[in-house]
Length: 190
Image (tube, rainbow, N blue to C red):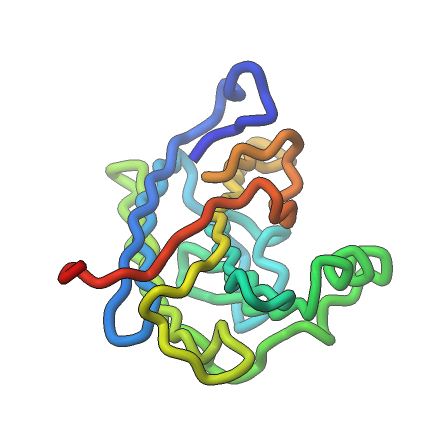
């Protein structure tokens, strides 16, 4: 993870490393997040995790559809799950300060977290089924998705978080899909 919009990373920037793969029609994501002060006030599903403390974000959009997903995981494994019908929807939600129309209320994806304060790290794992991402049934082999992974890193002594992303954003606007990466689902036999 990085702060591509800055000439030099902020002094308190802590690196994060993301690994991805796929198995049985699900995307697998593993994040290792360095963190000197691991914290969250999250207590339940679908809270605004980015406002409540540390948060790891996953953005996904299949190339052939306009809707995309934003998933967040807090260090205590609480989740936020959002599906936007298009990029304009997030702007409308911000203006209205209302993300409820885009929430996914059922258990959408599996996640697990491991917090290691003595090592100044926490880890997040997510297993995201393709049927949650796609609007209609498809085979995953050969499909392409846009993706981005981002982070809000809070400390108890700092009011604002340090943010970072895997995408080369020119400003810290994580929903800017033109700057997301592209992945292709291929099997090892190819």
